[in-house]
Image 1 (cartoon, rainbow, N blue to C red):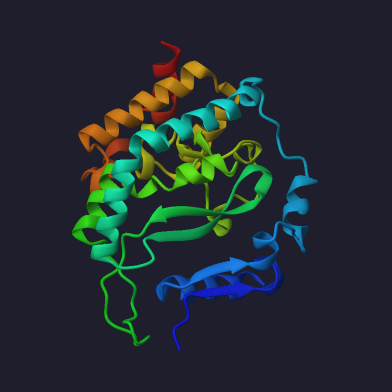
Image 2 (image 1 turned 120 degrees about the horizontal axis):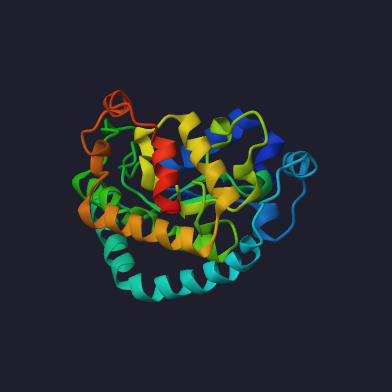
Length: 273
């Protein structure tokens, strides 16, 4: 019997984190679409995790710009979907040829006010099961096409749908896995996560978690149209020059730190100048 979709009659939070992650892992590895019934029909049976965070003192963004930003996100995402649709179709076709169906990868992340959502990307890894469901040995390294999609950020094009759905913003702190979220309710939870952000254009994986948190906090407290345009232009430059391709260019975090440069202070001076 071939199974192409699983619908769970409840929210992921009702089954415990370990069980939910295992269900998602198995479905993703076997190319099975996973949906939760409450989300599918537009209701939420259990909102405890979200309400626990939403009722806590999540810092509010200090800029009125975030109220305007949602309109910019919707119009920008629509425009980008139209302009980049040929690239998205080509990328999807290449993924289908390279790793097979489904062409999309999904994973739960934490968004605005700690609300969980499913983030979408083009798949870059092959499933460790064959058509008969038998496990096969597959490298966890992306294929040549997968590396190209990651290097050019084309694997993240499906996240434009997340922007339209209100889960994400074009620019903001990158969404974290639930287990990677800092224990304290940080400023990053007070805004929608972004396709790209201040931390990504100032080092990405080269900087530590604490430095990323500092970059994200600075962005939330200083966001403006000027800052967002600056981040967008830097992102375009990184994509065009392949600056952070593969394993973050060949640069090493420790080597960057040994230069004696305070990355955060330097980055803040860039936007102030």
